Image (cartoon, rainbow, N blue to C red):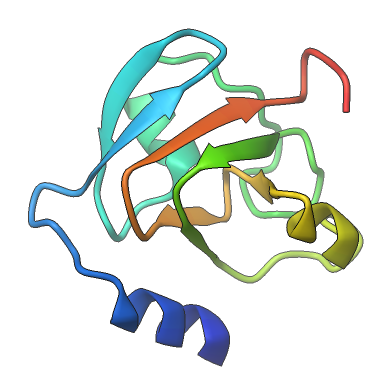
Length: 111
């Protein structure tokens, strides 16, 4: 984890049960542990979240963060540009919650 990600996660209060994540595409409300990615939590909950590599290299899980904050695990630089990140886009496979959040995937609906 990068130093900014560690610092961001260190400042956020962690709930022992994790955080609530609303998946906008399905309306599902799931729990995501503070140490797991949004993609992993969605898959664990039975949600067919679009993905391919689950390692931050393909961009299939590109998502729009509607509300809340995430810390990003390392990823390929070409997968998520600084401009995309600044506009609230994230990769579900690299996004770990720092708060309750709402997110929607863009992979099946266009960017």
